[in-house]
Amino acid sequence: MLTDRSREYAHELLELYGLKQFENAKPSELSGGMRQRAALIRTLVLDPDILLLDEPFSALDYQTRLSVCDDIGQILRDAHKTAVLVTHDLSEAVSMADRVIILTARPAAVAKVVPITFELEEDTPMNRRNAPEFKHYFNIIWKELNTNA
Image (cartoon, rainbow, N blue to C red):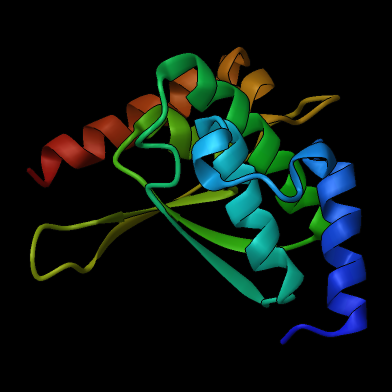
């Protein structure tokens, strides 16, 4: 899939998301957050319609997790991409999503779909965590998970 255009796009994304100087670095030379951004850039270069993010922040420490969550959320918005985020972290789900799909235990079925909307001037995952609506959505999801436990 390497074309002149995809190579150029990869360079643009590296520049845009602060990894240009690490273009030739080995993964072991990058922080956890940088590795997550690099992985997302590798995926975006292929121009997929939908991205699957399966527990993308689970290996990161809490502070890095919050920062990278904000970064990834912004990258997805800027790229106008749809992503399916699989997570067990309720705060992460509420801060990142426009809807949360709660599944039952095995075999998994949809238990409930919770639409998520925030009235924020700057709608970022970090700002959502501080918004009054955050607790409301968190509690709805928590209650649903414990009802189906």
